[in-house]
Length: 188
Image (spheres, rainbow, N blue to C red):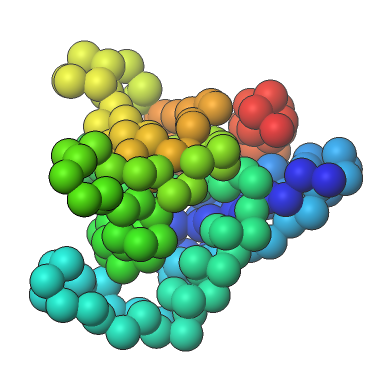
């Protein structure tokens, strides 16, 4: 059975990102996958890696739980909005605090190439944006998902698929939501 960790990196559980992750959840459970969910907006942690890697910063209980869930999972799914061409600070802080040396990667003595400690895991990325999709491709590509994909790759996690839903408006019709549901179902 495939073990999937869903990570909502939007501070609002009533967001379109949350709805899209819910579509993924229902499709994956129908396929018999075991699912765990992690809502970054609900957890309590310091976003700042205050001393960098020079000094160990104690992990809050929620971040320890996040690491346990990442180790447990075969597959991770990140859902977030594109803000200022990237992902929200909430996700950046989460990555800084959770994907640490000794957990996600480590350097071997004398080697400039890190050992990827999360090798064998896969991920999907689901993004939303108020701007049209073409906007990102005309202006240096879609930086947020590319950045996350590179971070995951550095740790050994292979990104399978990335979906960007652009031109999102505040009030969504049932037809539009059904269309988004079909988009998400294609990556499960």
